[in-house]
Length: 60
Image (cartoon, rainbow, N blue to C red; front, side, top):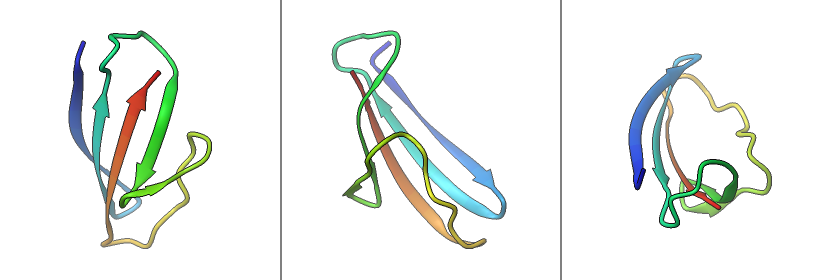
């Protein structure tokens, strides 16, 4: 799989998520950014309701 996109509403916030898999791997996260800023680890901090967050995950 090359990747996918999805929209998830959680606790009133909208998460626009793009997952890229350039090496066609089946597990692991190489990098993750939230609103263009790098995030260490793979857990997102909660955001206020009615917010929209752009998340990009590169598997690796």
